[in-house]
Length: 489
Ligand code: GLN
Image 1 (spheres, rainbow, N blue to C red):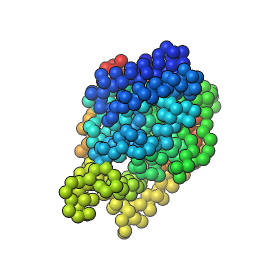
Image 2: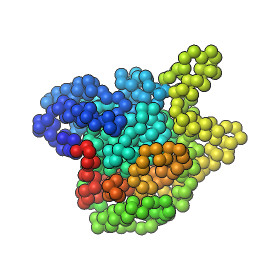
Image 3: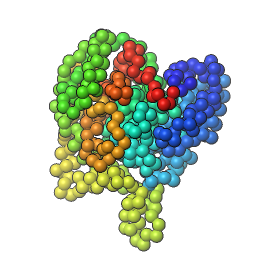
Image 4: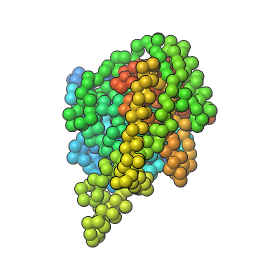
C-alpha cells in the first residue's frame, strides 16, 4: 500500500479495497517498525489518526468525500495543531500545545467539504525553527536519510522527506524559507514544491523569516504534490500576506502537452561548485525535455552570487525579531529560579534555544542595530530587488528556469556541522527563489553512487500549474521518482 500514488490510494478507498482505518494502521505499523532508524517523527498521533480515519471512512461511505479524504499525511512540526504539541524542533517549545490549527492544517484535515479530510499520522522532525540544511539542529535529534542511514536527509524539512521517502507517510507538508522543501526533496528522491509567496497561508505556521517563509508539500511525484497543493492553497483573511486570487487547477493541468515550452538555463547555476555527477544527470534531463518538445536557451541571472550573503542578512534579521516573543514569559521554556526579569529572559532563551538559533539571533540583532542597519540590512534589501529583477527579465524570454537544486547528493552526518558557512552554501541554488518570491520545485533526475539527485524548476509568479505539468510530463517519461530505498521496501 505504501508504494501507491495519491490517486491510486483515493481509488482504492472508493472501491473499498481498503478502508482509511486499514490504510492508516498500515502506516502506523510501518512507523513503529522503521522510525527508530530514521527519527522522522517527533510526535506520533496514532489514536487521533484512527479516529480521523473512521470519520473519513464514514464520509466515503456516505459519498461525502473529496479526492484526499482518508489519505494519511505527516505534518511538519512547524504547523500549529490544536491539542497536539508543536515543537518547531526546539526545546523552547517542547511542551507547547497550540489552542488552534494552522489554516493549512484545517484545510487538509477538516472533514469535507470544508477541508480535505486527510488523516494526520504525526508531526515531522525538522531543524530547530527551520534553521538548517541537514536536520542536525533539531533538539529531537538528527533525521537519517533512508537512502543511506549515515547521511543527512537535508533540511530543514528533513523529517517530512525521510517519512515520505521511506513510505512512513504517503505525503507530507513542509516549509521553505531558503530551500527547506527543495533541498531535502532533492536528497531523498522526492518531488517538493514551494509555491509563490502568499499562495498558501502562513497563519499558524511558526515564523522564521516572514517575508521568505512559504509552506508547500513533499511527495513521491508531481501528480501527488498537485493534489495536496490544490487542497492547501488559497486566500486566507487571517494572513495579511496571503494573496486573494483563485487557485489554478493544478491536477487538471498535469496532462497538458509541453511542446513549445521555453526553458532557460542560468549560466551561473552551471558554473564551478556543482558536482560533476549531478551536472551529468541534469544535462541528460535537459535532453529529455527537448525530446518532449521543449526548447532550451542559456540565460543569465547575474545577481545570483549575491543571494546567499543577502539571505544571511535578511533571514536572521527577521528571525531575531520573530523569535523575540520566546522570552520565558509568554511562550515555551521558562528557566527556573531566576531572580530578576533580565535573568529570566537570558536564562530561558539561553536554555531553550540551540546554538544555530542563537547564532542567527545574534547576526540578526547585529545587522539591525543602529549604525549597521544601512550597511547591512538596507543594502541587502536593495540587492534583493536586483535578484527579483533578474528573474523578471528572465521570464520575459523563457517560461521556466531549470538548474540544480543542491550542489551534490546527500552528505554524511556531522560532515558540515563544524562549519556554518559551508552549511549555508548548500542553499546557493535555492535561496534566490525565496528572495524573489517566485515558485520553485525540485524533482528527481537520477542517482550518483546510489544516492538520489534532484533538479530544480523555477517559474514565474503563480505558475505552479505549469511547473507541476512539466514535472509530471517528465515523470511520465522517466522512472527515477519511482525508485524506493532498499531497506524500507
Ligand atoms: N537552510 C536555510 C537556512 O538554514 C534555509 C532553511 C529554510 O528554508 N527553512 O536558513
